[in-house]
Amino acid sequence: MKIYQVGGAVRDRLLGRTIHDIDYVVVGSTADEMVQKGFRPVGSHFPVFLHPITNAEYALARTERKTAPGHQGFTFHADPSVTLEEDLQRRDLTINAMAQAVNECGEPVGESVDPYGGQADLRAGVLRHVSNAFLEDPLRVLRVARFAARFPDFHIAPETLVYMRRMVDALELETLSKERIWQELARAMEEKEPLRFIETLNQCNALADILPASFEKQWHQENVQKSIRHAMHLVVAACPELNQRLACLLRIISPAEIQEWARGSKWPNEIAEYCQIAADFESVYSKLIPINILAFFNRADLWRKPHRISELLTLFEALGIDIAVWQKLVSKLIGIDAGQIAESVSQRSNANDLGKVIHAELERVRVLIIQEVLSQ
Image (tube, rainbow, N blue to C red; front, side, top):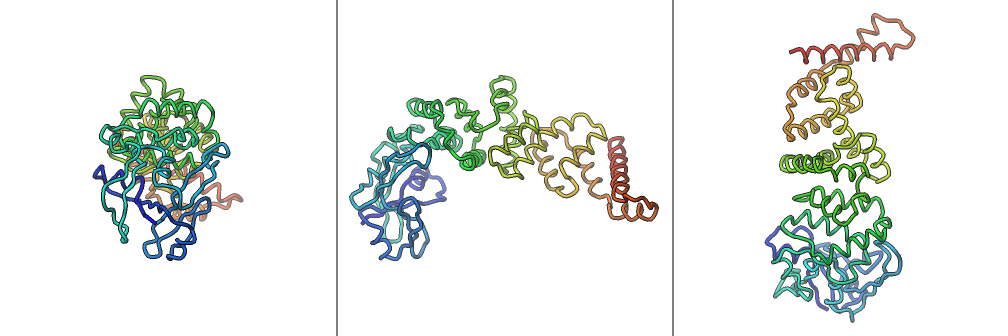
């Protein structure tokens, strides 16, 4: 029984980067032996165990065979005869197909095991698939694009890009769940250069599988693409939040298009709503018309979610837009005492539909305040 750290931990150690997640592979053991040593089984598809003290995940070395379309259409084989090299061969990229033995405390010892040239590709800055098995998992199209966003100095090997296009052309990405696509998109948008994820998807004809068709159409317009690149550069430097980065990316399309796409793509509601509000703000902020401003604040639900508007203004400030007037508007409007207005109206009116009368008075006061701020 031998235990190795594998994948990202080995890669990041060689790169001198901070290690976040550590995966272990156990060679020459069985599920029964792991349980006897106190490990707790947790894997539903293949044998994975939690360490009895650290709770770190340890997986038995395994091979796999494609049995059905899609990301999960595999059967796994794990027994003591499976070698470390066989286990590493099923991984996506050479830079993720390295291992390092560990001692009894789980600490790495000795030289890295590198049967597929991962260290050479690290030095050369190349994202290269390990074997033809790469073609069997369409999720790897998105993973490679995400690694391109994480490592902006790396390039994708031409032969790997050919494989990615082949999977896209075969409609393999349609077998991925909407939830898994969202997970990859979200993680990519939080990487060092998220726009490389979009550029890579465009290179392999997968952009329409991930983002609205209207976005893809505009992306191919040189002036729009240049504008997106400039805006994303500014926002990534100033705004680390996922919702702000996505909103910046999608602000070139309409709120209705964002809503429709998000509904079918399983995006979290709060993210989708934020992106819609940002796109909506595009059509309002340059024309300071009181009734339009109030309508925007109503749609954005400023009254219950003022923090969301504050985040939005931070986003547009990062884009170089003067938001001083808007900050003053928000401050004044959320300072209105709605309860006092309701009490005053109630004392003066005996209308049957008192709620509508109060709402109308509140809207009137809000418009007056907007006019006052704009006149200053």
